[in-house]
Length: 285
Image (cartoon, rainbow, N blue to C red; front, side, top):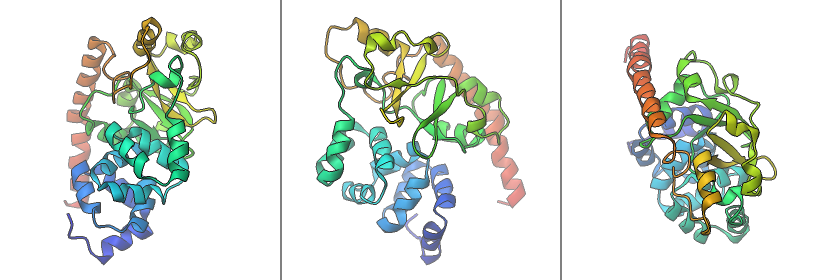
């Protein structure tokens, strides 16, 4: 897809939000290939307008130096959010290459004492903006190659936690319903600095197996699962680096995961495919 022209570059520059929606609907490799030669000054606003999960996947495939250049053009909250979602090896390489004024606070934001929620949270959990529709969200979840748990954190554009949407609610909702109108806002996020024994007493564990984690200023950082919390409390060893998906994904019950996968597959066959054909008929594509 490197055959872009002035018209497509103008589209990226003049309509970054619209372009972001198109790019995040493509296969990650296809989007990254197209963006390889797009100037950073044009690309940065587009990536900042994208959902953070697909944006992070695209950044993982771009040259490291271009990733660094893009980060220097984004606001700190966007950089921190994207960095947490990137591959761990890539994250470490970026911290080595980024300017010190940016790398130092980012490094501090990733460091937590071993007996705190932050040390055991999963930073790779997908999360989405309030304006995303149920159908668009399901389409993005289809692109994730690993199971993603039974609930999703919803954030606003300040990257603060707005609420949580469970998978069953998402699957049963009208296609165009926005996540912001589906989410449960009563859930209380766990502060990353909170000690594990205190986190264990959260009343939200009675109704949720995974809870969002926030920074001291309310920014979304990741999630902590009930299973990972139990493991952390029982462990005498220092907290290990949580691999992507290790808490919210790998430690959910097998029965629950089978059920969620089946529901999403059903939705794919009966919902998303219908949309594809409907849009094709509407546009003549």
